[in-house]
Image 1 (cartoon, rainbow, N blue to C red):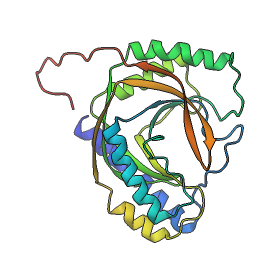
Image 2 (image 1 turned 90 degrees about the vertical axis):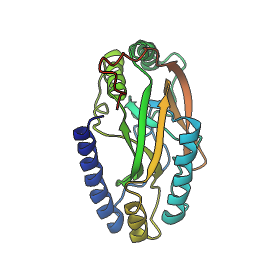
Image 3 (image 1 turned 180 degrees about the vertical axis):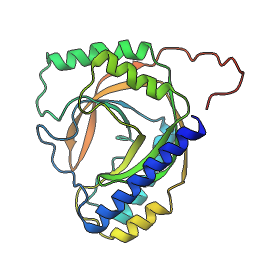
Image 4 (image 1 turned 30 degrees about the horizontal axis):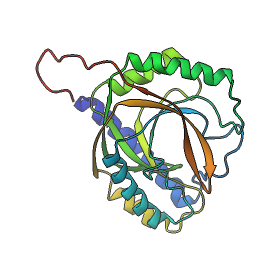
Length: 239
């Protein structure tokens, strides 16, 4: 990733922090609740970080929850940590086994993965949004963006498709925040926290189901990212 793209990402994460801080302080932040038809948490294409990175994100998520309060969803746990590449539809409580939409997704996923390289992401700091606390992700090369493009070409674009930053949400807000200013200060102190780099070799199609108060991923299909990285003519390492 070039310095100019990194700077652009930083500006977007900074703007998100400003907006999130205002809403957290005012108590107008989004509050996730029960999964309902037509709502959030529909079938999506996601990337799952490697175990070591997932463990680091889980530690940060637990620290965040200790400040925000236990009502909130620990989405950064090892079992649920993910980076969404392509949300495909709103939540549906009942999805038939022969659902034509899911058939289209499962057919398109291997076609996109076969044209895509393993994805490398560097997690560099936290930011605050009206929805929760995010671990900011910076693609090391163009593999993440190419995967997203290939998925849109194979599965199709929709109103959920376009995103201009990469991240893993470590805590989703699900109620009032016990100490709003303390949470803002806690995130501000970790805006540049180094959380390491992950390499992801497969892409997952997942649904979600309620498990207590936290949605759990339901794996539908996992496909390897098969295309070998291209040689770099300059001899310089990517990134």
